[in-house]
Image (cartoon, rainbow, N blue to C red; front, side, top):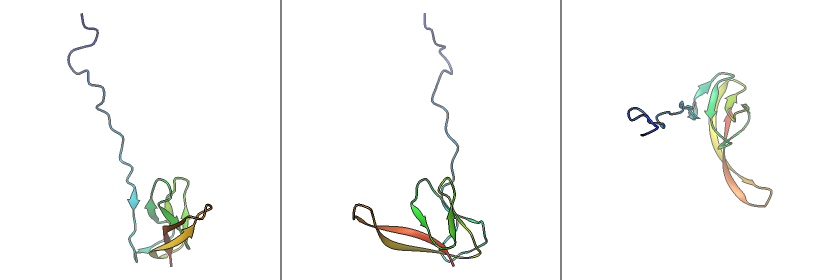
Length: 90
């Protein structure tokens, strides 16, 4: 005799909730203080002037102004040059 029930015994029908990651404010868009700019896992976007980073790597505005994305080359501790994207509010 079988020990498992024949009908409705599927185990992998669960799914996790969406996390809604990504850009929340575009380039040259006006934002208020405290507005969320980027939700991310890890530091894909780095913080610039007028932007602060939350405990889950969320970037948010610390002052009112316009959002600006820019790229800059940074040097790592082992001498490797990498281009990173920064977010600032001006």
